[in-house]
Length: 459
Ligand SMILES: *[C@@H]1O[C@H](CO)[C@@H](O)[C@H](O)[C@H]1NC(C)=O
Ligand SMILES: *[C@@H]1O[C@H](CO)[C@@H](O)[C@H](O)[C@H]1NC(C)=O
Ligand SMILES: *[C@@H]1O[C@H](CO)[C@@H](O)[C@H](O)[C@H]1NC(C)=O
Ligand SMILES: *[C@@H]1O[C@H](CO)[C@@H](O)[C@H](O)[C@H]1NC(C)=O
Image (cartoon, rainbow, N blue to C red; front, side, top):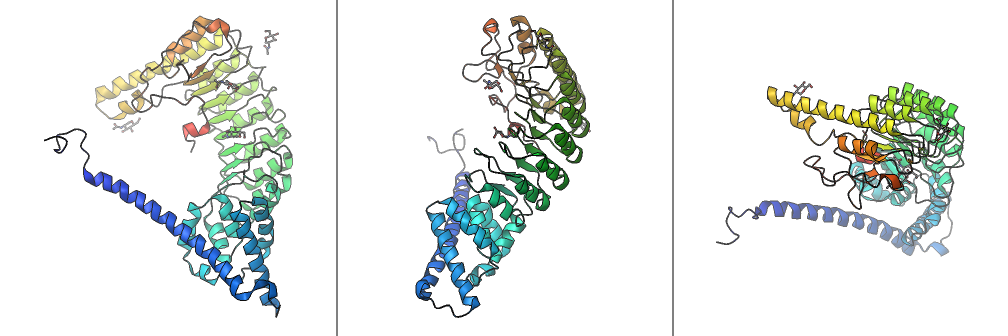
């Protein structure tokens, strides 16, 4: 019989299909439930106005007056939300933030907290903020349950918004405040540091208006930070950054791209002294960084996995040699435009790669010999050494040295369209050729072309 027996390799047991279908149905059901809640909320607001007749409403006492105002605010919020006019939403939020409860939404308060929290996980950040201004139940749910928030969609009012929500959202662990047009000021960061002591992941990139006051505030209030992105914050000084590293010692990911004043050798020495768990560091275009700073990193942060030194024009072979010797977990190295890097640096990378390959093989053999399951863990996949190296514009390099690097790291390749060894702009290096689809592990045949902290799932 054709395609019906279990001997057919393409045959899939019907239970698997129905399980997927069941999950999809469950997902759909939750979305339906959610839209029902929001619909009924809007509907109850509008039906309330309908019965009361807001415009002709005689103001009888303070309580009713407050009700009237509450309704107006809610209606405008709903309209703002419906038309996606976020600035309108935000203005209303400021007003709504001052209200104490409001009586009309009694039924919302009756919802169990677990359900509110569940809904919160399903809606987007703008809705969460609007919801937090609506009634006490939501506000409690938000302050109890909200751990992540991104306000990068805010084009005008980010500073005020942060000032008004920081006291409410005290359980935040992840906060993205990336801006295109600088809005945040020190007061807002101080409010965050005062109220959100649980913060782990903070993105303040391109906050050109912030000064050292912000870094000192974070140093005092947010000691659990593991990821900090202050890329483009050119006003921070190295003293403030060094101070921050002395109190935030759990940092694993730090983006200092373009922080020319902050990223000095002095600050990097503090990083090497204090942040021994650092895994990702971006020092792009930090022109004051020299070998002294990079060597302190190499000695202090042995777990470093990705380091971008692009445009650090002062660094020489010494830096790369120290990294090759000390940071065996290094997977991504950016040396774009480091023109004082020579073949010596490449040979030291290559020999560290060969050493690691040898160590892996020894481990594999040992484990096969002893018959334990550790061999497969170390032998394949994970620990393959460098898999991203950007040496574009490093004009002093010659083909044999770069070829040696290529040959000692199976993770590096120059496949068309997705190079992980980046040598563009090096006309002298056109003869270098890395394998393209070399087998580097059973589950990861393709590497990402650019390495971000997410590629390493920094914990
Ligand atoms: C930090 O901010 C920059 C600029 O906004 C961005 O490109 C980068 O992906 C961000 N994240 C990290 C972890 O560096
Ligand atoms: C190499 O590094 C530079 C500087 O970070 C970057 O602009 C460029 O896009 C990188 N090249 C590739 C192909 O990723
Ligand atoms: C970098 O190389 C140039 C010449 O190519 C040299 O003049 C300069 O001193 C070098 N810089 C360092 C920090 O070694
Ligand atoms: C794997 O190695 C670790 C130490 O490196 C050892 O504690 C563990 O027992 C080993 N696992 C097996 C299955 O032998």
